[in-house]
Image (cartoon, rainbow, N blue to C red):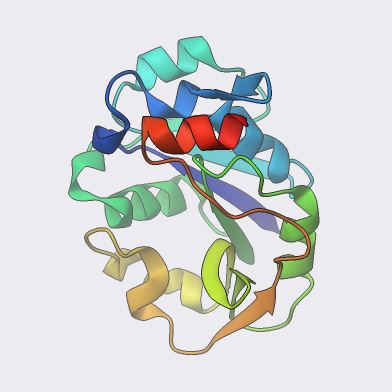
Length: 182
């Protein structure tokens, strides 16, 4: 069984006001783009943290199970651990971020179709998301700390080029948002 995990717990301090997850690109909030990209995977868990109720109220997350990570301020590692616990026993997890609106289901399909215990999308050689984690690496989620995600526990990640399928840019600041809207 496969599940998708959308990480959206961060405070977005650099964004400068309002939850970044609700910033609109192409007529819908960032977080809705992320959920749409993984819709073909099956079960989708969205991990919220900062401003969770505001995000729930401002976005259509009906296609996903929403969980709120109490330790979100610790960093991405805490959100990943919490999300993995919510997902439970699966064979693989597709992990993506809520602030990359141009990641598509085609990227998700390519990464999933690539063999290996861990596979990540790369864009013109630069590592990105989504990342697929398979057994037995899933058991290592308990080791995750800080803001590095699975990066520190992956030994043999397989990179698959996806630059021909999507724009991997993420939105961290209001200036990034304005560039993306053009």
